[in-house]
Amino acid sequence: MTLLTGAEYIDSLRDGREVWMDGERVEDVTKHPAFAGMIKAAARMYDMQHEEAFQDQLTYVDEAGVRRSRFYKLPETHEDLVNRRHMTMSILNEVSSTMDRFGDETVTPLFVMHDRKDLLDKYDTRYHANVARWLDKLQRTNLFMSSANTDLKGDRSKQPFQQPDKDHYLRVVEEREDGIIVSGAKYETGASYAHVAFVKPTVGAWIPENTDFAVAFVVPMNAKGVKHICRAPLARNVDEFDRPLTAKFDEIDTLLVFENVFIPWEDVVFSRKPDLAAAIRADLTRWAAQGFLLRSLAKADTLVGAALLVSEQSRVDTVPQVKDRISKIMVYREALNAFILAAEAAAQRTISGLWMPNQAIQNAGRVYASTNYHHAVHDLRDVIGGSPIVVPSRKSLESNEIGPIVEKYFRIGNTGAENRMRAMNLACDLTNSAYAGRAQCYQIFAETPIFAQSMALYSTFDRDGAKMRAAKMAGIRE
Image (cartoon, rainbow, N blue to C red; front, side, top):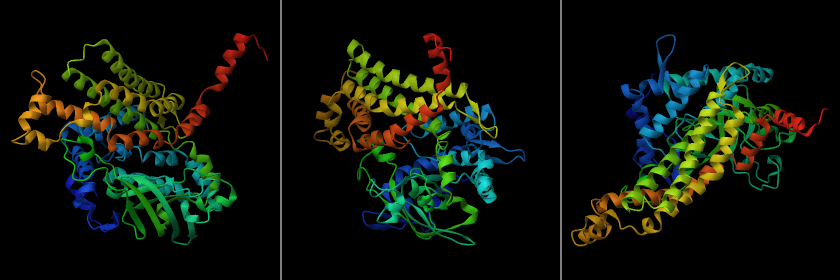
């Protein structure tokens, strides 16, 4: 197979996958309105690979002269790390600055597994070979890889093995000569229009009793026994004029259910290895966090732009208090950019020689991005005021009877009603809509909860260096 085009990507989703929404089976996700916006967005990404303007940013040519996806290229040089930033930003700039799940970051835990060949081989030499084979396949085809991290958890006061229903954490039911049988469920974003998912454990005390829950594998989204039970869309029959983000970029979240699903050994990354799960857990965001920060940067840029547009159209862009409020969003944006560039400039080498962003700087950036996004949103809300939530619809603007009235009251000088309403509708989708609410929740929890991010920062920070400096200033010689 070669790199897919947009049309080939859409056609590939007609593969018999079992998708449910509102209690009804979705026979073809490509024809269902809830998925239409994101499938169109993903198809655009696939087409970009074949366009001269984007080809070098999204693809590379290997030693044999074969063009491959840069999404799935191991960062073997510092230039590769820089190119990953350009690659992700090209998608965010061309397709949507508010998308979160499109494959470039979901593969990166496989980079971690590939990097730790020494560790995987201690348990089973097939594990690393499987990772390498999947990376090769993804590079050649650019299949859309989603992830599957978050277990249902059930009674959170109990360990996985203590749950009355063991399926509240995904687990291995049986190991056979030809593979494993898994049961349980995960939450995942975008799974219903992805090709495969990398399933991995992310929580749990890795004690012997939790052995069955220590499993990682790659699974096709149309595998027998996999059910996609999707949340309802954030809005129905919404006009993109009225809700530009909701209409086009609603990333459908899914309860991904595994009912005794067979996973062949060639797709297993590890099975029933709690020590391995514990050893690898802290490293899984080494490269994924770069993608998270880039997405946060693009969102911050959009917040700044929306604030500038609305304030300029309302003729308050010269008011000091408004400029001060907008500058707070700019601080958020520029701080994120600084974290990204600093982590890249101070990049570190891994155990196998791969290049990764400086982990302490990047982890500090993760904490900052997650804890301050809602403040930036509120700053935008303060700039735009309450007007965006009372904007009439496109139909009102285009009505022969009341359209002229809407035009009269929403026009300011040479800024017509349509452009004013478009800007305010974007601002509303960033601050006050269901889309905005989901985005703020996603920003806090999708990159692991802020507490876990803080613990990652604590573990990667140069604590010894800081203590030595303090001890010297205190006159402590021992």
